[in-house]
Every structure is written in C-alpha cells, then in structure tokens.
Image 1 (cartoon, rainbow, N blue to C red):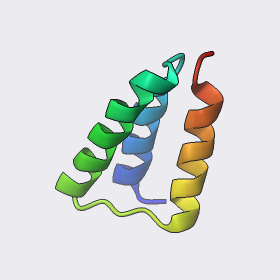
Image 2: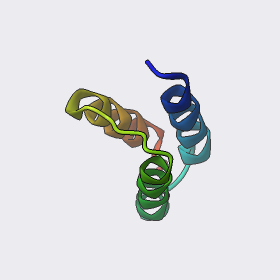
Image 3: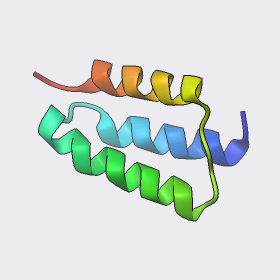
Image 4: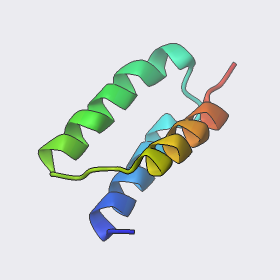
Length: 60
C-alpha cells in the first residue's frame, strides 16, 4: 500500500480510538476530505476495512 495512504490510515486510526459513533461522523468526513485533497483514493475493499476498523474502535 502507498506510503501516503498508510500514513493517512494510521492517523485516522489514532484519532478514531475511543470515539463515540456521534464523534466518528465528522472524523470520517474530515478523513475523506483530506484524502481527496491529497489525491488519495481507496478501493472498495480498503474502504470496507477502514469502516470495520473504525467500528471496532467506537466506544459504547
């Protein structure tokens, strides 16, 4: 996987840890906007993994 993409995913993972589902929505939107600005695209499989990992990190 591309180094830029890995860095962005790592940043997202760190920021999303322990967030409530309510807090995740703006975080995901900001993540998507940042990726777009940096011309980073994700495959459907990568997006699925991203959302699965985010879902695991959501606090109850």
